[in-house]
Amino acid sequence: MAEGLSRSYGSLEIFTDVDLAIDRGSKVVILGLNGAGKTTLLRILAGIDDPDTGKVLPGHGAKLGYYAQEHETLDVERSVLANMKSAAPDLDETETRKVLGSFLFSGDDVLKSASVLSGGEKTRLALAMLVVSAANVLLLDEPTNNLDPASRAEVLDALRRYEGAVILVSHDEGAVAALEPERVLLLPDGVEDHWNADYQDLISLA
Ligand SMILES: Nc1ncnc2c1ncn2[C@@H]1O[C@H](COP(=O)(O)OP(=O)(O)O)[C@@H](O)[C@H]1O
Ligand SMILES: [Mg+2]
Image (tube, rainbow, N blue to C red; front, side, top):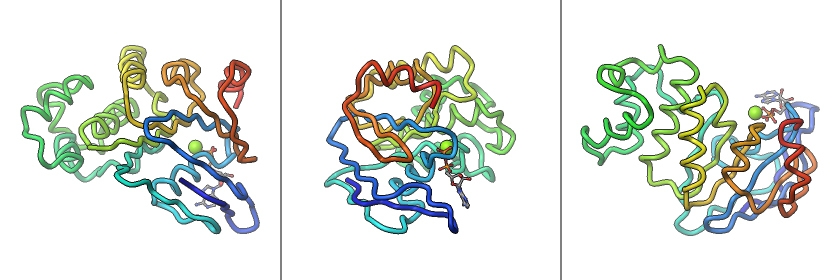
């Protein structure tokens, strides 16, 4: 749950007094133009940045998983495999490689340094890390950008099946359709509403 969140950068007010309640397993989409504060809000919800006012109250048993638009959660000093191990230390190497395989990393790919990966490969690695983590609340910041059609289809499928809660930022109509959101949060206004078909047209514009 988040209450009364506000954030400015210098004299630039990004959003003011945003409230948000995420029920167990619920799906919410955040829509807003470039610069509306979507990434800023997700970073605050993820606990990476602090709001100027308001607070985030994590629910009992909630385990957050954050997919960063610019992939800053990846450790570029380390390999694909080592990044996966940091996300799921208890998973053995065979299992880890199996998940990586489903995200189209095979053989020696997993030994590559994260620093040399393409945008699409970084996206796939970051999503694979979320899959093996024990997260039950996903904060996803434009997770289908940079993906080739086959990888995008896999991600949409995973979104469709995911049983935990998801807060999705996306300009991708297919990704929002796959999520089947119950609610929408509009930025920068902070208006929350039930999802309806009129919002579908806003996705690619926003
Ligand atoms: N660290 C920062 N310092 C100053 N301005 C920032 C910083 N981070 C983001 N901004 C500004 O805040 C606004 C919202 O950014 P962002 O949350 O990334 O928007 P969105 O993800 O909706 O495109 C933009 O105008 C951006 O330039
Ligand atoms: Mg953004």
